[in-house]
Amino acid sequence: MLLITEALLLILAALGQDHRAAAGARKIYTLDMAPNSVDDQYDGCEEKIADLVKTKYLKMEMCKSTEFNKTWHDGQNKAKNPEDNLKQIHSVAIYVYTNNNSVVYRDFNNAVRSEKQKYKDETFSWYSLHFLLTNATKILKKTQTKCYSTYRGTTVEFANDVVNKEIRFGSFTSSSFDQAVASGFGPRSCFEIETCEGVSVIKYSKYPDQKEVLIPPYEKFKVTDVKKKGQKGAWCDTVFILKSTGTVSYLNCGVDAKLVQDRARL
Image 1 (cartoon, helix red, strand yellow):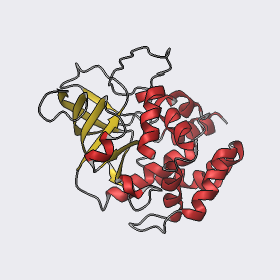
Image 2 (cartoon, helix red, strand yellow):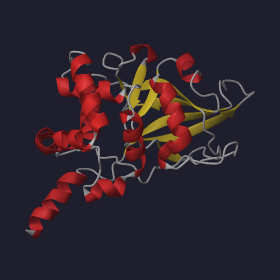
Image 3 (cartoon, helix red, strand yellow):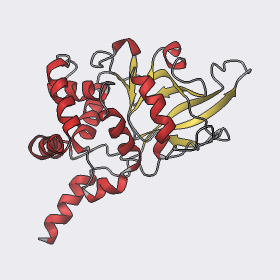
Image 4 (cartoon, one colour):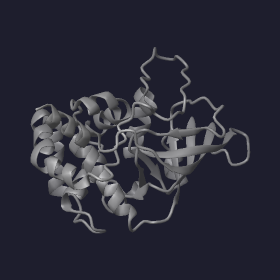
């Protein structure tokens, strides 16, 4: 169900772009470095931001959004008991993110793809969920040390002149260990991904049968090949082959830096 929702989301806002168009219009989008992504890794400020989430952001954001408040409480009741050095709040965050019965997932991903400036201005609506998912991903990565081969299907058409180009998805991106699962959710543009930052969230997802690997917005990839329908190995209209090339975060500790600047003005 989550991958179905993500395929629909890509029609509206794939990789930070507005995909609203007249019915029937054929749109082709670009794969790029997602320059407007909220890509904070919180390297060097995790403890400080964790305290802000606990004392400020989570309560504030739940008060501002009835839907987030409802979905968070649902997650508190249904999330799995944490393992792998996660805390219960991390398990709740993953459950909330994978809850297809709520619009939180849609609104959150759209914001992460495009609201870099709001994040810097401290008007972003998702500081708590963004931090908790990022922190959970990094904690899980300490025990899931190997790179994964995963698959992703979409209903969106991307320009295919991207071989040797470096790209990012620019949001928390769902992929699957199972090619059959991925291909069922979008035959237009698909991805074979070597991710070295993505982590399995099967134990914590609301939908474990999706065999989900969650890729963070700050991981970057090189497009090593593009296969078209009819070519050997093409299981969609177009298959983009991606190889991880590390990470980049243009907003690292952005909230912390903003707080330091504000205090300096006092």
